[in-house]
Length: 216
Image (cartoon, rainbow, N blue to C red; front, side):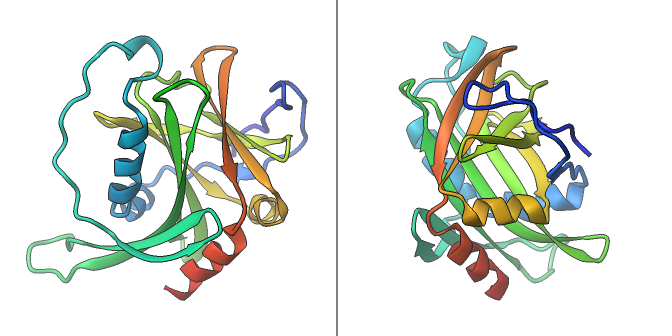
């Protein structure tokens, strides 16, 4: 379990309880990576410069990921699917689906993308959050989440790739209900301890997009 974030709009209001749980299993990460191609492409278009101490480093060129299929849009959310290769040679492709939305900060070239996928863990269905943040972000603090100005929790970073760092968590049912009922979600990344940068995601269409995932 992760500790509840002690943040308000000024990122400091204490809250009680835990509403996001960490999931670090390799299978959970692999499930969402197949649909990150389209979201990552949008993220890279926003990020013409890097965030934090590595801001002046030139980005590495990455092979182009297969283009995912746009299944639907609901409000400000896009739902897409992609056929990922089988685990072993000759295996049938595995179709994975997810919903995403990208956000920009006030700082030019710095953006963030949230990918939401359905998965199965220990025999139960779960909803996973994948936050794609810029290289150079301060990793120990993770990504703080606020919904309509109220602190909810933190999503911990699990790995970094050449272009992005990824934070992964399971969204608990209470968190999902707050996102369904909310208007704005702020995801806060840190350049250094205490130096947070909030990026705003609209929750318009979140409920419908999540329902679409249930049907795929």
